[in-house]
Image (cartoon, rainbow, N blue to C red; front, side):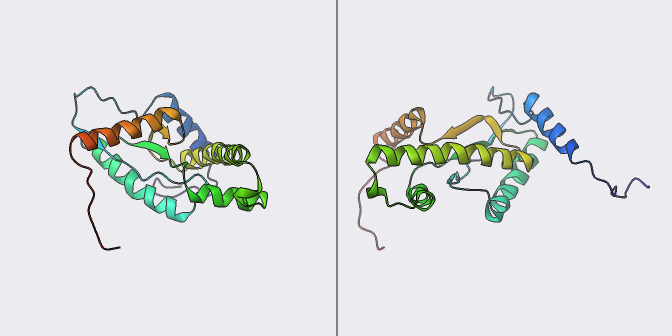
Length: 173
């Protein structure tokens, strides 16, 4: 077989070996020490309500290409993975899975269903994303339903308010 031919028997285990190596060696870790120019990719975090679909794949490929390009050009890239755990998509999925409406059970039970679904799906989606070889820095993963992230969000709104970046106005819908 010449060097430019693709082997007929592909060793899928080699992918897992590489993914494990990248994880162990923190290949895509954001250093943040100022020795290189910083480039930040602030991804729109997906709702963890199921499996990744081709739309997710397409969006992350675009971002991943940019992250790799910037790294190859000397940038320290912060490319975190986030999970948007709040909102209607999670509630709708819980209602579908449990064949209920949210008012059919008490509030705490419904919240537990949402939290359990979210944790399970984040783990499944992490595995899928890692298997696709995306170059996120998993050390900077964030999950919006965790208290530390709620606190950061509130602080950022307070800062925007203090900086006069929040205002009320009339706009067409």
